[in-house]
Image (tube, rainbow, N blue to C red; front, top):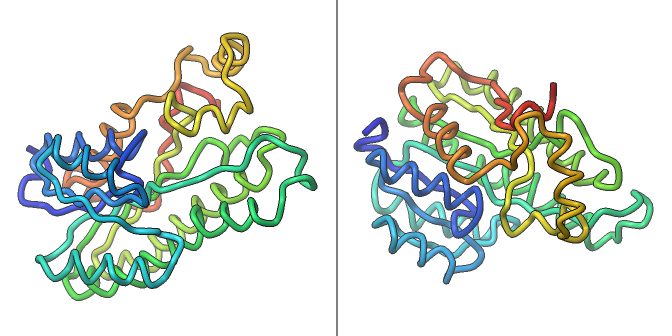
Length: 245
């Protein structure tokens, strides 16, 4: 019960890695707000763990502001997990459409800015709080044809470090986790198409020989957001089976 008595938000919590983080947090005693643009998905996970589902488009300021009002009206917040993310399909960098670039920019980057505006003042008032950004190995060891997605995750890693150094004096810790691809709804988008041959080729680049799982992400997130990691801030932890070695 490492998160007993704590309250957490997990964006993109209705599926994939986010759902794994929600399940782990709940099993460790946290009250979890499952936040997702897909309210049905959020409700399914929230019902499973006794959490609270909230619909939110993290790319839009008004939606994030409404989320903050909803959550903070119920009591203090201890943990914010910025997990929601999107990618463009594998493509030459100059062939990615402006609309697809904008989606990656707004969901993967601007959302972190918007949640910071919404929740950092609350954490400052409390002189405590843990923020976790779900970045990617793509921000450390980028793969061709995912250029703007790679760049967005590199941005998130740098944002994590600069947030950490600015907020440390306020008692707020900020860390990131870098998963390699997992068997989640985004996998097909990363690979372009999902075939046994393409999966085998992808897995050959991971020394431990398997994809990241939602459980892997939940375990790492739980540690970084718990009091056990009270001396850990500004870290971008690779949870990638050795992909970045």
